[in-house]
Length: 339
Image (tube, rainbow, N blue to C red; front, side, top):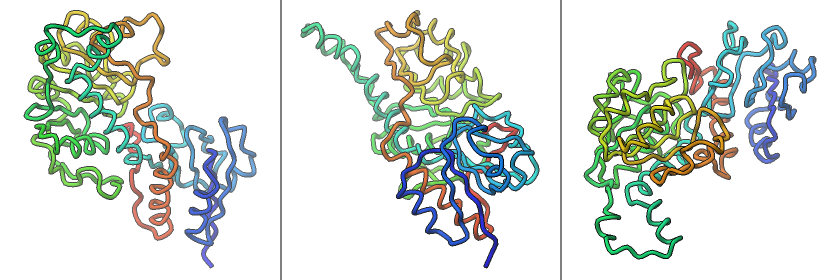
C-alpha cells in the first residue's frame, strides 16, 4: 500500500464534507483541528502533516518538516503573502480561485443594474413618498445593452461576470496581466467562466488601464491585491473615466485609492460607485462615503454564499485527486506575483 497522507484542516468544515474527502482514498488520514493560531495545533501534529487546508494558520518552516502542499480556503492570499512557509523549497500553495466566482459575479451585475437604473434615487423617493414630475428624465437608465463594461482583472470572477453580461448585450473589455494569452488555466466550475477568452471584445495589459476605462460606461474591479495592484485605481485612472460612468469594487481594499475616489464622487467626475471593500474595515462611521447619494455601500459580502464550503471542497477534492495521481495542481500560487 502506498504511503499514508496526513491532512490537517484548521477550519470547522461540516462532517459530510470531511467524509467525502476521506472517501477519495484509503491513503488519506484527515484530521480536523479548529485553529485560529499556530499554537492551537499540537507540535506533534505539525510534525507529521503533509497537506494543510487553512484560512490563515501557517506554521514556521521548521515546525512542519513534512508539509508539501497548502490549500487555502479563500481566493485572496494578500493577508499571508509574506509567510516564510510559502517560500520553503518543496512546498506548493493553492488558492480557492473559482470557488467564489459565481456569487461575486452576481453581486457585480446586481450593482451595475442598481446603479444604471438609479436604484438609490428610486428608493430615496420611495422613503419620502415622492412621485417626481420629472421621473422620465430623473430615472433615465444607463442600460447594459449596447454599453461598455470594463473588467479590471480577467481572472475567475472577471470571466464569470463576462459570461453573465453576454446575455445582456454588453460590450466587454478587460485587463489581464498577460493580455497575449487569453486562456484560463485555473479551476473552472462546469458551466462557468470563459476558458478561452471568447466573451471579451478586447484584452488590455494592466499598463493600459487608462485607455480601457475611457471607453467604459461601467468599470468593475475584481483583481487580487498584490504589490503591483495596490493603488492601481488611482486619481489618473479615475480621471480618465467618463463623467457618466459607474465604478463597482469587488476586489480588495487597497486596490482603489479612496481619497481620489471620494474626491471624484464629490465633484461628480464619475456618476457613482458600488463598494464592497475598503482600505479600513469596518468602514469608519465618519467616512463621507456613507452619506453620498451616488454610492452603494455593502459590508464586504460579495463573496458570501451558503454554498461556499461545498464549492470549496469540490475544488479541494479535484486538487487532491491530482495530488494522489501526481498531476499538476490547480491555482498554484506564484508568491512573487502575490496570487
